[in-house]
Image (cartoon, rainbow, N blue to C red; front, side, top):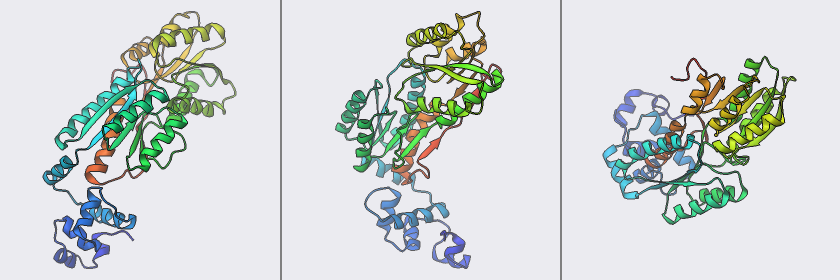
Length: 361
C-alpha cells in the first residue's frame, strides 16, 4: 500500500498533530520508523541503506512534497566535490556541437553547487574511448556521460564502472543488452527509423528503391534506425533497400559514398540519410538533375534546412541535441542532489518531423 497522508493516518487531524504541515527530514524519519541520519543518507544518496527502507523514505518524501533546504543542500553537495565526466564523439557532424552546447549550459548551472563537468572528445573507436574513460577515472569522477561505441571492451568497461558505484548515462547512442545500466537519454532510434520509412512511404506512394547512407556501422543509434526502416517496409513489397554505405559522419566521405551509390544503382529513386554528412550527400543528390530522388534525413542543421528549402530533402527528423545534453546531466543532478534515480532507465526525447513549411520554426 502506498504511504499517503490518508493511508498513514486515518484521521487527518491526527496527522497534523503528529507531523505538522511542514514536512522535514526528522518528520520523515518518524513516519518511516528510522533515524534522521538514515533519512539524510537516502535523500543525499550516500551510505548503505536497504532497498526497502530507501523506497519507504522516498515514497514518504514524495507523497508529502518534501522540499529540501537548498542552502544546506548546496553546502552538502559542495563538500562532496563531485565531478561528472562526459565523453562525446569527435567528428565533423555539427550535431555533436549542439549536444555539447546542452552539456555546457547545464554544467554552468552546476557551478553554484560546486559540481565540475569534465568534457572530453574522442574519435569513435573503442581504444580512444577507453583511453578517455581511464583519464577521467584518474581525475576521480563520480559519474560518466558517454556516447558509447558498440564494442565488447567498451560494454565491459561501462559495466565495471557501474559495479564500482559510478553511474553511467549513455547519451544519444546506447549499448545493446545492458538493461541494468543507470540510464540512457536520447531518441528511440528504432522508432525513428520506422518513422523515416513511414514518411518515405507517404512521399513515394509506397513504391521506391532506396539507398541508405549511414554514419558509423558500430553506432547503435545508427543501425537501430536502419533496422527500424527495414522493419517498417516489410509491409510494403514495392519498397526495397538497394544498398547501404558508411560515411563516418563526414561530408566529403558522404559526397563520394552517395555519388558512387547513385552511379552504381541507377534504379535508386529514394535516399535515407541516417546520420551526419547530410551536406555532402545532398550535394551528390543535387548533381543527378535528371533523376527524381526523394530523401529523408536526420537533424536540423543549417545545411539540412537549406536542402529542405531547395526541395532536395523532403523531410528531416530532429532529435533535440541540446535537450539531450541537458537531460543527461539533469538525471545525475537528481541522483546526487535529490537522491532520486530515474524511474525508467530509458528516457526518450520527442521525435520531431520538419518539412519545408516548418523548417525555420
